Image 1 (cartoon, rainbow, N blue to C red):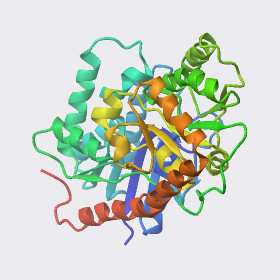
Image 2: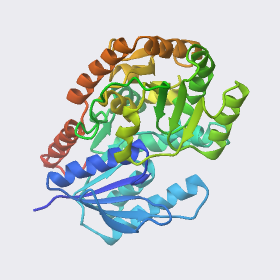
Image 3: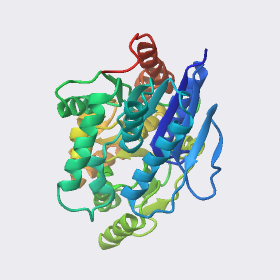
Image 4: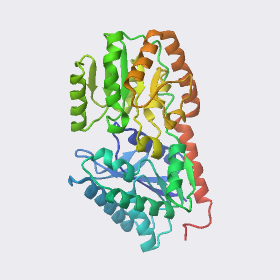
Length: 397
């Protein structure tokens, strides 16, 4: 008999964001293992309301509501209605957001549904919402969100997160620790292959990912005048989505520092299948994560780092525990988070020593292509499912 899974995520799939790649690979792993998967996500105008994605049926919820919290709550309501209409259809519910998670746990209690619940805790609103919506002031809302996150952690049957830093933080939220499994993000070695050479002229510095506040893009731009002074033709390519107001601020900063559009190039997001080609053209890849509770306390697992390394590009990254969990000394050049001068020095060091830079990239590629693959992540995910399905008790009391 097929085990049926409802996998919910208040994310858009597909999209250029790392979350979309993560969801797609996890879905594919479950489908290939024989699970019947329904993927319930957010959607955008022009996207089909339902189709097949990664071997699963994907259902997309779209709302015209402009307020984020109201939109998120409506997403939770839609998930509630879906499980109510499909009474008894699911053996496992697997959620990435607290909005659908709260709805699924309430439905389990209210209707007596016997499904098991997995919380994939990749970003908690109590920590992250202030970065997306800085107009939110005060501590009342974060406290309420944190209380909801704690309640969810106490009720679920298993928790998945992407780093040991994240696991430590999650354990700090509840006295009765849930079972937590760390499953780092990965790469597809067949798609992300080590690049040949890398002596691009002019030197191309590449950042690939969301241009969000916690990513430290402002530090990167502040480093560029020093880099350009040493290598006048150096170009910084920023590839990824950004909120208009944030990109406007970054452009203003670049202009204030005397940088023109040749020095700093804002590039449109690219589809995941196109990303390897863009990274292969890089002379140096960059991960300038800032020192914030989002990166240091809650934790993360930057897919960009793994993809940079998989194509054997030399990397300069902020010295944070979540980065060292992936790459160590001799595999990346570190700089103190927020220190633009030190970032610039590390980039210049690699530009001046191309052979050493190539060796750095090769070592990182060997590490990542062996240790951090989506196949390994999928196998760990299936271990979690096998553990749950092997239990006699269907849900916690």
